[in-house]
Length: 559
Image (cartoon, rainbow, N blue to C red; front, side):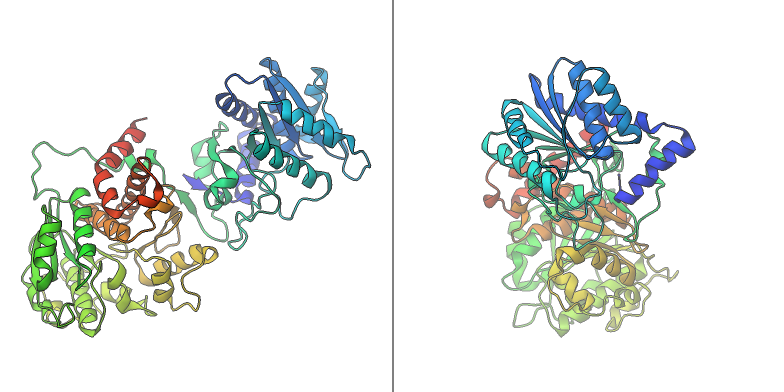
């Protein structure tokens, strides 16, 4: 699903009116009906609704909502905040309301009338719900005067009287623009229980705090899908929201004649002294992610721990140092075990050091030459600190330190394409990769950082965190809506690495593997969180809920 900036959405509306011939009044009617439907589902036995209408088209939507609710037998109180009657389609809605006898209570900015405050307070206290149709995504500065006072009254009664608030497009008081440093900024005390937006989510609906937006519904305006999908990207580039409908279609049915060799073999290079758990969790993620076979290559001293922790995977002992990390001699061991591997995962708990760096670089170069896709996480990213672009060199066979593993039996010399590598940094690792002074990458820097990393590395890059971002080298970014703060605990990233590796081994291209893996990972976390307190969530819970997450994804696609 495309995420459109307010400007891009305005262009979609204009094209619908000018090119297709859909009247603006029809678009306003469709928007109003969507809000009515959502409101009646929220208060199925509601009797009275108060609607706050602004001076523009957002207010016109509110007037149309009021008319439809009034026609359905609800008592409706309209408050119109405007110096004069609105023009255009909003003016048409006002005229219709007045002809029906549904006259709004006018609140004219700048006038000395103060009685409206008590009237609004009384109306809201007597209502089952309030519709906030003051301002949409065009608000760019804090509200003032009667607008600010109205929002304060609405927010106070929502908290004090348990009033249900439905926002039209956006709760009035949130900044709806596109600038990274201001997206979702709270300009006034805005909050809603439900926000209904139209045709496509806007960046604010994706990145702002849920406590201000409530649940978000993206309502259909009756526009052709290609009109939204073909909208040009804004200055920040094209944004998408991952959805169950699209991702569920990625998952093919498994053949009844399939066997463990059919579904790919993951080679996982992971673990060091004190970090065997990272290797175990990544292995378990790969197994639950659907890989037919998983081999975990770990320092020899961890063999028994990993064997016991992940019964369904196999292990490969690597030479280790006194500190419990892999030695460069591991390159020769790995060279003997590439046959039949379908994906490489590098990094969980691997540790750091010169020898580790050489082994990582050698493994990636060998995977490249054999046409094996790879996912790199955690300590596997450390060798590329401040030299993210060298990962592109690794893909082109130009990395240093490849050693004897760089000479393989691949006669074609076919290298990996730019999307055959997936990186999964958290904000701190991202800052280190790009050599940024601010570490970790701040929320306002995330979009720019993930795009830059994908462009420089030539890889698909997954920037983990709240609303995980997935970027491909040409600049398009997908935003993941699943997951929760309970997943902010050790080991969850290792599980994600295993899932993505399993999907790569099954033949998914890196972009699809990253999208599916991130979505399923977050969905498993949401399913696990539903069973208890977020504070008790652990990485192993995600592994156990992956099967259910796959079912939910397929169920959503069928629905």
